[in-house]
Image 1 (cartoon, rainbow, N blue to C red):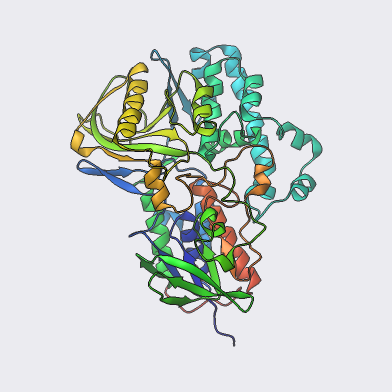
Image 2 (cartoon, rainbow, N blue to C red):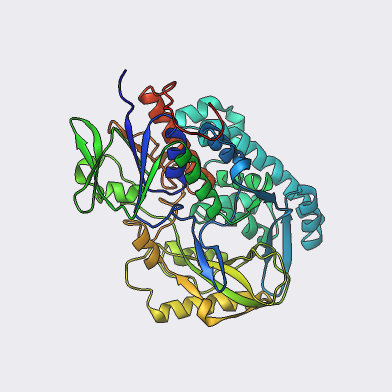
Length: 501
């Protein structure tokens, strides 16, 4: 009997964790992570006496993780405790206008009728039907594929269904035809930013994110970090080893196949299979070895998605009541994205996302704030003066929408594109890989398989794209591809596992 292959996963982000949890049922898995713990962009940060999510904060597509945990021989509910939210998000505009979106679309329609008009409420219900059709049409041939192609997408959908998706239209054009109220265009156009894109350049198919959120937004007990830790536990129960503080210098390519990785300091870790959860920009720029670069790949040398300015703090909150997820919209949405993508500048009037997880109206509460920023990390631009400028613009936008913060200064922690560029090499601080701009962007992200035997990709910079569930799907697809390519089905090692056989 041939020995089980040795597998190395580079990076303990959501893609790498998902791949490791599944593959460790079949073979020996070692996860190498440069940071001190699991999660990647999923992280927590101190805000006074408490810690708070300081990366992704919205948990959707729970069914993705239920399947991943099942493939890892575990049960999602045994590891992660969640509560479904009734209010998806609360939205604010200058002057104090406010609109809640609910998981119940009829409640949302009623709120929109009161906020805008009965006609816009009907337009919203029609939008719900459209976005559901888009999601249903793309779920199998796109989201669950290891690497979709235009031919496979066309062959799996009827011409009428494809045309309904408005594949050649931008999201903003499609929303302008759908809604008369510009505030509703802003609200639903914001979903492009979930992929690090501009609604004025992103394809209309990104409207499917509206259906995803309407299908369920959950709060995780312990925050999003708990999801990463739960996947780590599953992988360890299957026998996986995690090594933190492990800086991978290069992937070894020998005799036309992967043979391992070399850590900084020259230590080699042998491997027959490598799953790379680093941003593909790092791989293609040669940071993981020039002999592993696929010469025909262009990801990492082209445009990059947006970055962010973020703050965590403990603060007194004055003004309207907050939901867990809150958005304070810019007065000039187009100018905001022109600044980010055309001039590589931080917006003068940014949209602010504010996450307020505390369920009480305590005098002091932890909050996380985020504004869009260009992928210009490493440029040295984010000095104290620029950071102060970004802070004042964020605070001003909140105040113009009726909210004021009185933070405890010692609890404020800012994260800039420079910081993200340091944490995620070769990205310039971009948080979502290549931007989802234009209809071809769907097919330009690399799939999980590469031309190098034994090398697979995972993470938000590969298909199906950025976001916690999408990155997890890429890890699941990478694991499935490697299991199939190396014929690992039925070769379960004898390890202690929770659930499953």
